[in-house]
Length: 105
Image 1 (cartoon, rainbow, N blue to C red):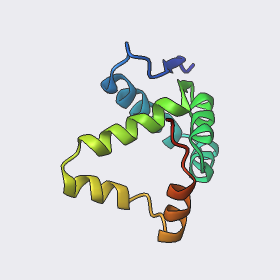
Image 2: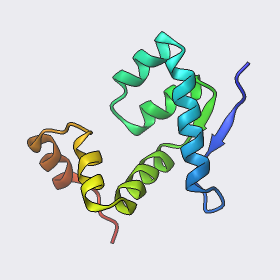
Image 3: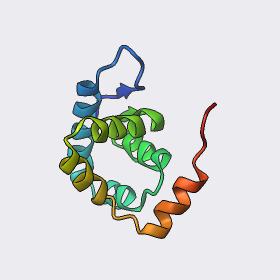
């Protein structure tokens, strides 16, 4: 039986808690071909959160996105660039996304 883990990303939860939950979720996913396939096919934060839920982890999409963004910001420059490049976005896709990002005033 998989225990339900919650990671909403509130001010009270730490980055370490979310990192641990993500690592544990990935361990569960690695043991299940259906979950692995679902995670490979996930193209949005919400889709990743859905797979996490199927694995027994409640990880809010916004918490997931902000967690990884914060890790990029906190990393040394070379590491941040390397980790960003691992996302494998092509330039056109990235420019389109950046051009269409919502900005809060």
